[in-house]
Length: 601
Image 1 (cartoon, one colour):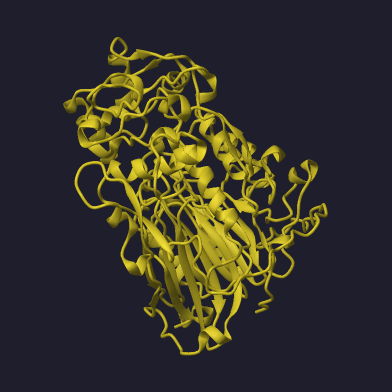
Image 2 (cartoon, one colour):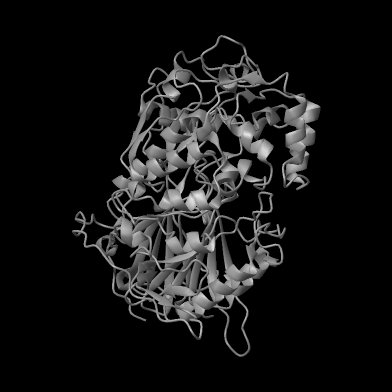
């Protein structure tokens, strides 16, 4: 296999006309029989129909090379959790944050034994950053479930009005990473693994695209002058930052912050990522509230309307929560009837058409808009016009010479928050991996293998069988070129080794499943991934967790964009007390994951 190191500047730009055919950085895959040539990154048929002509190579627009700064000595720790991590101070009640010692790197030989001297022999295959579960939240949206707080304390987050500021600080951190921390290699790209938005709202989708690509964002909807949501409702169930109300959170030591809500809805500026970035869809991107199928026009009207329910009894909240967690309401009938029954007790808010739920086609068109290309591109951020034509949200893209990326759509449009894949996508994945058997493959999805348990039929394809995580894991294990499956959804760092089974007389593959914590729950992390060839029959996958650029210490008088990003982290640390669980064990954080070259045992 060719292993020439690629650089960021190899990603080519595309004009508006070209994107209607395909993006230059991405294969025209979209479930219609196309895949990526590992040698030249052009669109080519993977399994062409007998009568289909070969597609023409897409037109390309030259882009000047991106200047790469001189690499610092490697390994290095600056800006990573190897150097330090934010941690709550000891004590009870509301805890301020401090800088704690960083997390050391753990070498894992579950799939291959480490060989001494590999650091002096290794060559870099690729280096990139994973962001996951940003959950950009329109916190004033009428169709939200804050009132479930009456049944479960963690059903609502006091930091929800600050997700945009927090995400921009994460973009700033990525931009400040001069190179990959272990090898000193230039970073190739950034990939998201879903739940980029929280409530499938057009407002949130616009904010996400501007956070990632750059621009000015006003994280407000409804009344342009005032916040209208649960945090100035006077309901003591929620933190009322501007009020003197002795709410449930102030009783725990949460601060009184004059001007907090006005600051939270002020304009935010994002520099946008200075690397190419690719997008993967999650259940919160695909469905309202991450669990309800697009099937009820009444709920769609409620989303843009002028009433918002802010309070429920504990008994009603418990019943609604059970209908969601036990998968009893995939079409939203229970919540629709509940909202109708509470018309009189819901509160008046300013209607806003921008809060409408977006469809998969809307999602694709927004990504394909050249206005959201950003500095690094590519137009579409992985998605192509072929996706739009086929109604799919999965694709391949070039990671580096001899390495391809595969972004899957594991959401189930039939409803519920857990995932699965349809037969057409599973067959496409199998064919794509076979077509690229001489290249290494990294697979990206939102759901983990264990959270793909929902095989409800897709309403758009009712006759198509859905496949669970065990079937997807088995398929990946049959392909020795698969190195890693990188995902999110569970809001927790978790790294699992997989040993594939043979297909006939062929040896099975080995790969690592790497799940990364969210950026909406503490400890609010993202992950740098480096793929290296150790030149001794083994490969290593180095994972290094990073936080946002916001300072660990907060100043409650500082309501600037940076001050709010720091407060976002501190509030999240106090919203729930299982941050250590979500951070995972040492073996799930900063690691070196070894496996046999080619994935063979």
